[in-house]
Every structure is written in C-alpha cells, then in structure tokens.
Length: 281
Image (tube, rainbow, N blue to C red; front, side):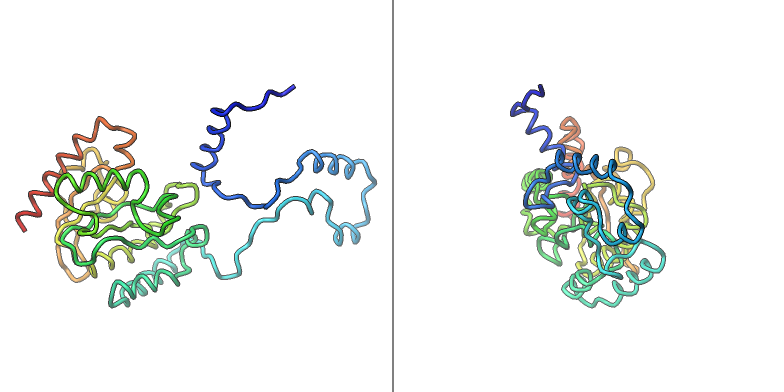
C-alpha cells in the first residue's frame, strides 16, 4: 500500500511545480484519473465504432481531459525577421516612455506576451541618473507587473541602499518585458524582437549611467561577448540610435548572488565603482 506523503515531500513537490511555471490550476475540480483509466480500458475492449460515429462522438476520456487553450488566430506570432522589423519600426515611432509602454501593451509580435500575466515595463523614476537593466521578469515580477520585486529584487534594494541610492531614485527595467514560461531562458529570436524596445527605452529615459545585471543583459546593452565573471567590473559603452554614448557597468545578477553568496564581494566592488562614477557626474 502506498504511504502518504509527509509534509516535506509534499512541499518539495509543490515547490518543483511552482519553479517549473505550473503555478495555476487549470480546472476547478481535480480529474479522476482512475475513472479515466477504466473508461479507456472499456473503450479499447469495445468494437471500433464506424468512422462517421467516431468523428461525431469523442471518447469519454477525451471528454474528461481538459483541452488546451488556443489563442485566437493572429494573437501570437512566432519570432521571425518580420516581427523584428515590426518591433524596430514601432519602437522608433514612440515619442515618450508612456507611448512606448502603450505600444508594448498592444504589440502582438512576440509569443511571450500570450503566456505572461502582465507587461513588466519599468519601475522608479524616468530621467534618473542611474538605470539598471536585467534580462527578464520572474514569477513575482509577472504577478505585480514591476521589475525586481522578488527575492533578487529585495537584495538589489539592499545593495542600492548601501551606496546611498533609493530604488525610487533610479530607473529599473528588463531587456524582455514579459516573463518566459517557467522562467526559461529567452530564445535569441525573442531577445532580438525585444531589443528595439529596450534600446528605445534607454534613449527616452536618458540615464547618465547604466548597470546591466547579469550576462544576457550585458551582451544586449553593451554588445559584449565575454562571460559575466570576466566582464563584470569593467566599464563598457552603450551607443543610442542618436549617437549618444552612455557608460555601462556590467555586474552579477542578484539571483546569481543568492545562489553564490561568496561572490557578493565582487558585486560590492562593482557598486562602489558605480557610486564613485555617479559622484563624478
């Protein structure tokens, strides 16, 4: 006889599903899999129905199983060069950050929009001297519609406070404004579709200094090819479409620091350099 799960095992399973992105129930009532199995066995034993009858009457198992939710035609597009061009044209046409946010809310050229709960555009104050950019929202950010509000966001807040900067006196965004399902890594195509929007966001926010959090954001914003451990602590440059050059400091992502606390000392050195650079502006 199967032993019931203890509390630890049960919490481990729930944690696994949540971290995999399965954080919502699809049905109000749990399906009875034993009844489904019995129905399936009975269906196999019965003589096969005529083709016309089978086409009209699905099996009890098929009726019991939840059907996948299909988006309306045209509501989701697979990433391709057409969508990249559409993103570039749309981003370039936005005269303000509010207009850019509204444009992103209506943009249907990226498939990530259909699986995310909220658009995660930005937090803080536009026009701040300091802009921080991560790669993509996580679960907490997707729920609240704001970047860096989970555990990594709380660590980022403490780091900023340590150099005398309040979160609301900076401007925070992500390269990708929608959470990838299950927190998976965005594909290169998804990143290219979103690139024009973050580049336009930088241009409109007009920061004096950018901090890229993690390797993926550093590669997009600074055009770097090295890994983040080699790249961090070394000033880079982001060039806007109008030709403006903005200093960029790549550093370790707060989520990485939570997994590797021994490397917090490296990030601290980076933020001390950021503090000194801001004072010199």
